[in-house]
Amino acid sequence: MTFCNSCANMPTSPTIRFSDSTTLRRWLDAARQRPCWHDWRWQVRHTLDAEALAQGGVLSPAGVRAARAFPARVTPYFLDLSDLSDLADPLLTQCLPSAAELATDEGTADPFEEARHAPVPGLVQRFPDRALVLVNSVCAANCRHCTRRHTLGRQALVRSAAQIRQAVAYVRAAPQIREVILSGGDPLLLSDAQLMRLVRAFAALPQLDAIRIGTRAPVVLPMRVTPQLALALGKCKRVWVNTQFNHVREITPEATAACRLLVEAGVPVSNQSVLLRGVNDSVEVMAALCAGLQRIRVRPYYVFVCDPVAGIAHLRTSRVQARAIAQGVARRLGGLAVPRFVADVPGMPHKMPI
Image (cartoon, rainbow, N blue to C red; front, side, top):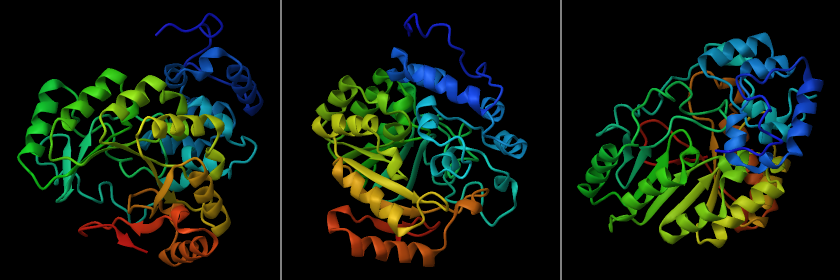
């Protein structure tokens, strides 16, 4: 990728370093004015790590230690949306490592035993009618509530031609599978060619009703959704995108444009929020988020309570609180804007309603 002359000499992670939060903010303000800010590859190339965030005054030494277990990673775009003067900011809460992650809790590293449910490398089948295909081990931002925070980068992937053939053959031999879900990591951090090779391989199976792509790119890296990619996905006729907006402030003009490109190309977009303490755990915030999503033609689909993953107890809300929020949202909004509040419970045959 060739970057414009005005951006060619900007430091890149892990060389981005700051003396305090003021210099971090100045760097973000200056970068936002440059043409390359709108290029998704530039954003990925300039992703900030734990050391850069610590030197920028937004990450404590304990947070740096927590990042050794699960690395910090955030795009300049998403960090720029945050209030760097408030470490309790709901956007920062999602991407900054916390000392609380080091505490022992009741969660486990792989609560859904994905390795045990992998009949072929890189393909997980927990439910009879759908298969999860892991296609990438990298995200544009590492969400601290990530279900795969302990296994990301360690699981087998489906990427090469041989691996794709093996996964497609498995699905073809299991006619009860009617959906394939591309996940990871974030599938949209693959190149257009890599992603479309996967999509087209599964789209060739007439048994499939849908190929779902699980991605947070519209939220943390919206410039990744280019007109060319949206049109290519739309041509397949069976692609659905599930994304994850967790706070109404994430619904920016850039995110709106990314979702519009997909929707207008014929790709339905649904949202799967995670109910997070200090982020969206109130009726007011959740109702504003759901109304905002409907406004940009993104269906509020699910709100999950946090999965039982080790290291995220500080972000988890109670079932009682989740139920109260669900009831409050239902009282405020019409049905099209009301998501299902559910829990993904290990061993259960479907998502469990709250």
